[in-house]
Image 1 (cartoon, helix red, strand yellow):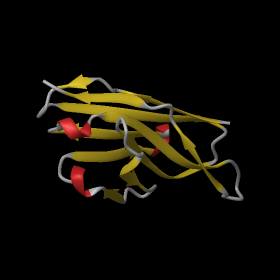
Image 2: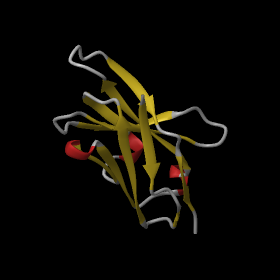
Image 3: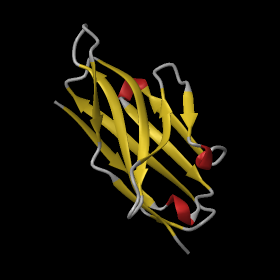
Image 4: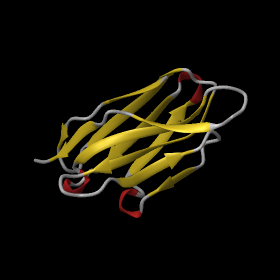
Length: 121
């Protein structure tokens, strides 16, 4: 019913920059929160950042002041600007969106397939 497609993951040098994108499509009436999680090998999936419809944001402490989350509501698209990445940011990044399919505004969480970010020199 809803598809989330991520893009932008790649190999990046420490101290460089990278921007991830996530676009939602399908049976969408309304999107509430959108956000990013990541999972490094051998680790559990962890929260990275989230953004509400009105632009309120929240970050995990380890990425504050380095990563910026934003969204374009008209295009159902979200971004994660990653500045000064570190090796410990290496992970598969997953986006999510809380989507309502009709005016009842019952929200369901959908996930993207993940995009690999590798921080290495």
